[in-house]
Length: 194
Image (cartoon, rainbow, N blue to C red):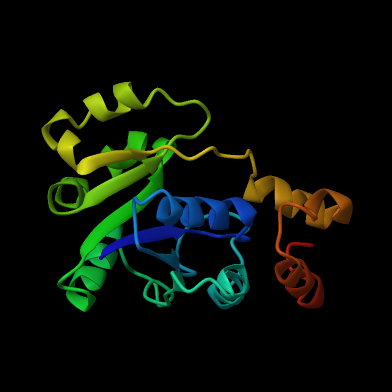
C-alpha cells in the first residue's frame, strides 16, 4: 500500500486540502492519506490550539475511508523526518510518501534532516502558484528519482484568507471553501475572531 503523510497547520482545514488528498488517491498516486496537524509549539502567528484543528480535520474526512487523521505531532517537538519514521515503523510493509506543495519542496533544503527525507522516502509535490517544478527538482538532482509531481488542479484557497473572512463575518465567501460542519465548529467555538 502507498500511504501519503499530509502534514501542515490546517488552520483551518479547507476543501482544497480534502480535494488534494482525494485526487491523489483517485489518480493512483496513493492508496491512503493521513493528515498530521502540527503541534502547538509550531511557531506560526494565529495558530489555534491543535485540538481544534484535529477536530476540524475529523469533520473534513468524515465518511471517506481512505483518509485518516493522526495525533502524532500534537504533542509537539517533532520534525518531518521523525513523523515519516513513525509511520514507516507503524506500517513497515507499506511505502510512505511525504505530501507537500511545490513551495515547500523549494524550501526543503532548509529543513532539519531534509536529505534523510529525500533519501529514505518519496516526496509527492503538488504544484502551487504555477511553480516551475523542473527547476525546483534540479536543486535535488541527487534524489530526483524520489520526487514525484502530483498533477492536481489546485484551486486558490488560502487559510489566511479564510481566517480573515471569518473575522469579518463574510460567511457567503466561505460556503464553497469550508465544509459546513467545520464552519459550524468555527462559529460554535468562536475561533479566529481575535
